[in-house]
Image 1: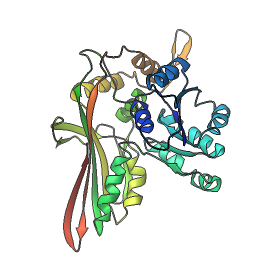
Image 2: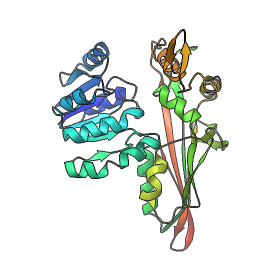
Image 3: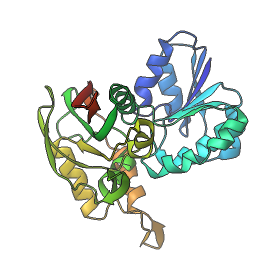
Image 4: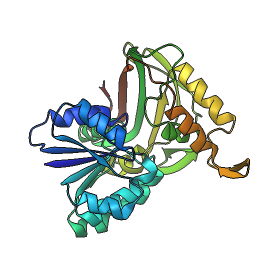
Length: 320
């Protein structure tokens, strides 16, 4: 099997590529991205001839379709805003597709491509990372153990356990996505219907196993709220997603958002139109990296409250 990975040298691909190289049946892995030097460097670092650099801009749909036709499937590990265009390209090229989530609104748009994908014989799996992904699997498994589901609580947190350097800011994943999570209204399910609440509302204190411990989390926009109410079913009336970032990280992002430095609205700077969102993201992406990469632990928790054999039951699942 030949696998193309878009965003192939990004943070998420750092784990995906080694896993694929260690998996049976993988003949070739395309490390795809706009920067040819970065693609070449990451491919070379694998020390495996099956990892090959593929310089390509995912926003150039005609070129992307042509390239995709040389592969069996594509893993979209790039920025979620590109999901619809990349998924359309995969369907046109006739190759299978998966991604790491569409931050709710993109996922809704992607689901509208269902008929086109079926007609093309293409399988598209949306949100198959950690959360969404593992979280959805835990929810579906828990729901299979219940006759009725009333409420589902989705919680996520983590902690750095080694690596990094004091004073060096390291986002755990795409900074653009994090900006959106801190600024866009969050969907929650109440009385069986989706409603939106302000980002970072719904303060909740939770306790996770070490090394995370007691943390404070808030409602955050996430893709689980698109699909899980339907896949779980069984009368579920309430569902929400809360994430708890380390305090120092949360305060830094909150300050950036509050100052308007993550705004998508265009402004004019010395005669040029720019979006603070793009400028700040580019600056952060270019910050020095620690000599020793951060190693962190993520914990995803799914709590289902419902009934079995007429009795109230609460199930809790965690993935570390």
